[in-house]
Image (cartoon, rainbow, N blue to C red; front, side):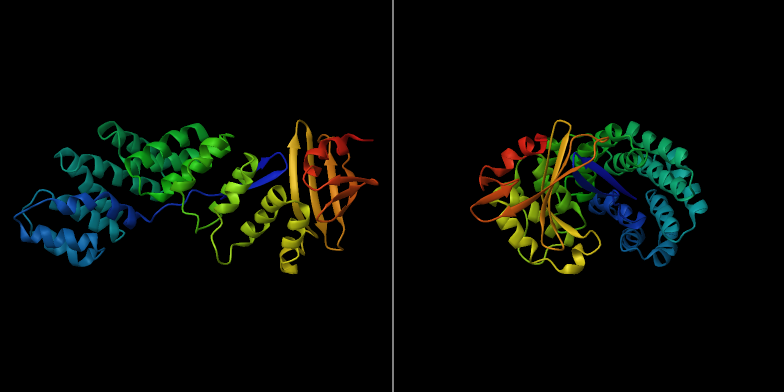
Length: 337
């Protein structure tokens, strides 16, 4: 699933909230359990095999264990082997006997979700939180479900709780970022930049767009690592350069782009902005022309102005503007009939 969020003239690429596999979640959930002491060697060995995802090897060993906790790990092993019904039965017994009740409910929720019973899955996750209010996995599940329904306020609440309980969970921070900017909470989203993995997916390009929206172009540029950025970052970098160093520098950067990157659109965006109902866009066309497009409202026909750009300034409609004042003059230029 992708979402498109329009920030005035800015298109914010939306990425679905990613998640870990069930097995990875199981490993994260039960990491703390590995630190528990036990005198039962079968339980120790079987538990270790489950955490290594060697479910077939773990089952017969856990079946020999007299430790009550072995029942929970047998259920995990069955779940890992795809035997959902058998696993669900054991998780239910665990709940009845007070063996890892919150984790057993959580796994029952995952099983319900995997069988497309989303209502039961959500109900189980709420039961988990009732027993363990800080359960990161349950909060993340409910956040993702709310995000899919476009209920961003609820998604924000649960992503925030998941991130608080599990600060090293990058997916929770990323989900919180998208939930915030979906509600136009750009400043709060920007404050998460140190929590986000800027090397994966479209997250860096989206964060750069938020920086642009907040007028923090220089700070946003500083976030771009050395190396070869993604196409989305390359395009966004040009806009940030325009806003920090002027159109001439942005054009020089745009000229470095491979032609196939802009071939479909036929132009490269150099700069853009919004003031009230006015949206404007400066673009370099494939034929070399630099155009200012002004749109006063959704109903109005866009007005076009051809620009002549040099390092010293910009000429439009036979009037010259110094390079450092041209951007501020654009709303006035657009309003000239």
